[in-house]
Length: 347
Image (cartoon, rainbow, N blue to C red; front, top):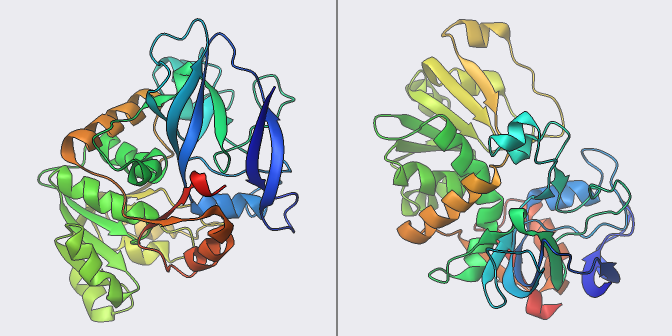
């Protein structure tokens, strides 16, 4: 076994603290890499606090992982020692169901294996995430990372990036479309970057007027303060798509009113309480509410390659791991521009 240093929550009532544990030895199809940087996702906080479902403890969070390969199994073909590598939100799937065969491992019909707070395919070994110094992942779920970009700023692409890239690609959002991005946080700022890069006319919808300057710097063409009734009235019926990145409770019906006929509101945020949607909000314009998870491995690699070619990375604040609780507190207040990333050299 590989002795590993990490930060873990021992229960939903305790804070993260140093914890040593063991990872499996590198098998014939595995890649081991030293973790250099790990992004901090809002879902890390949700999961260590059991906000969504009962967790598997001790829990080592982290699913925006980049580092350098230190060992490969005998049958590994696409990675060698010294390569830069990354792993996102999943580390395995059944690989044989209808969805997996279509490169949609994120929707594996048997359930994919999450990078942490999940069980390996053996059903008995918990997975532990990227708040640690090393990880072992089967080759099919390891991604190539370009050396052209700031590695720390690449880490959030593996969740915040692909979570926004995938739906924009699936709905073919681009030139000629009016896209609204609801919420300018870790997900929202990436949605703005991709939407603009794909050629859409992008508007940021935010409760915070103070974010207008940032939105414009990120490339957004317009900004609507959602607490301003006049601005909402002016925006009614104007968008082809709304990419909803908000993970707190909010009024879906009001936002649906901003869509054009046949418009679609795509949910990628995950509030812990169900939304209330009036049938009339949908009937009045043949509107749709849809959801999207992360992307499959093939699409995630496509996104990383696109980012390398187009010089797209996340806006980050690099932190020491000892400061992760302070980062969580700031994240809950929306006080981050726009993603915390842990420098794992500080572990």
